[in-house]
Image (cartoon, rainbow, N blue to C red; front, side, top):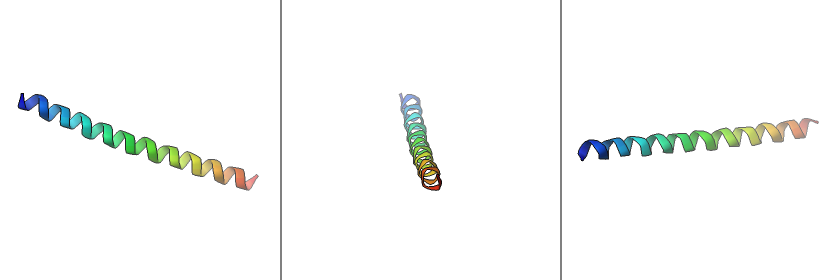
Amino acid sequence: MEKLFKGAKTVIKQQKILKIFLYKWVQMCKLWDGAFSASW
């Protein structure tokens, strides 16, 4: 049971990191999009 709990915690931690990474990536894309729109 303890092993299962630790495994679940690890998965949750990885999902959080993934969400943060995706969020930052989307923000970067929007930033680039805005920069390109402004330069044209």
